[in-house]
Image: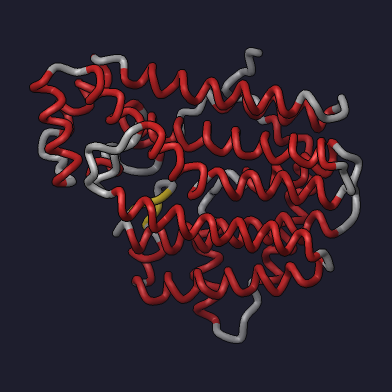
Length: 325
């Protein structure tokens, strides 16, 4: 399916997303002004809002129109934002989406503590949903995400990481909240187990493809478009799929250079590393892996009732492969 890169498949739920933004604004209210200031800073920074969008689209595809969909969509965005605040502190990042990160603007302590606030506020809001099943899914997802973060930390500077280990981390760290968002939409809609599992598989596949493409763009993207510096992953010692594939396909000398860069988190030879990644076909290997995940997402979405919302889910998966930022 060819989707124009400029087309926005989320136009279908634009009004609903505005309602989610209203809920987010209302629930950011705190007696401590810095809490709202830091949280609003990162939430307003231009994120794609894919996780709440997945929840809303899943609800729409399965016929649920109740108000809890907006509450839960805000919850998953809060959980996501909390992970970003903590990630940027751990990674010592200074730029996200073209702006200074919250930790750069407000300091590490404020970022960590406001991340904690967002997690706790999300769990307060889960109580409003009145569903132990939804609480279980989101609590489990939050735990898995934390485990993925720790595993990524363990994997830092490990040039021996293979594709299986890489995928294990991103399915925990990134894809799990996509999966939980789509599953919660199905639970709200009262879907049977088959449809709930199809929604969860869609979310996991889409989230995995999203992260793989994100890692590709660290070596193939435009820094101005992406809003972050090229080579950030290498600087942090992350052996992402493009680097793993480059080490597998390169010459001994190329493999040694990339290995040294990963093990030392060095960007001294960044231009050479980028050239190796591109010349060895490593980007094509990674894009092919993303395409397989996107196709898995499409197949899962095709199990949902035919309609505008399920068609949009399919479009999202197809358009993901055209990401430039």
